[in-house]
Image 1: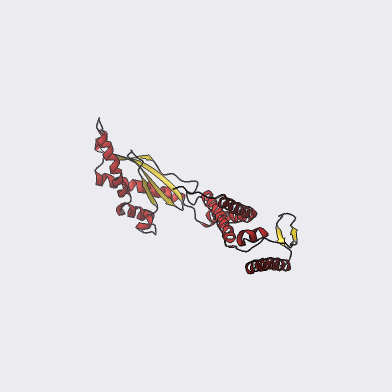
Image 2: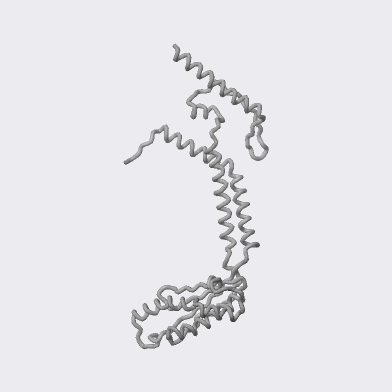
Length: 273
């Protein structure tokens, strides 16, 4: 069912949206400053507080008995791809991981060490990527190579494969993989901007005070008979208007109350007549 809106409603919606836009533009300086502050904080934390993590990756390919035959069927390829999941489980098995921990005399549990390892198998291939993460790039490279060597022997014993060949050895990373300083900074800028926009909009939506004759006509459906000008001063740079004194504000409220009282008196006289 189509919903039709009157021209009066559409005008009110446009005015509200315009007011919101003007309020955001008025406080654009605060939004920008907030975004810069939070972005700078996120940059500082990711750059100087969080310990960087380095990655080193080695790649292996597993040759099964059918690989050495003259003809390889599609089912053999499918089987080899499915078996890579089994190989991945063997690489992170307790038997393999505990040998690596003992080799480097690490003070770490099996579960915590496994969290440093990630094993990926690219689609439609029998190549396995083994990645090790650590705070020390040299140690990450040595551990991933040792993990590959021990797991290759384990796979040959358990899965009865012909060979596990090395495609790429581990490398010493020169740049940390985590945290991403650029990503953290971008998130900080966006978060700071959105938070300040939310605060500005919340203050605007909760502010139900009457500030002008237009507000009197809009919210009270009453016409104003007179206005008392309020002294304002222009700032040399910002161009923002401030109330000159609290007395002028009280005088403004008193004028509005007088107008309302006079209007109510006229309505009562009309009803008595």
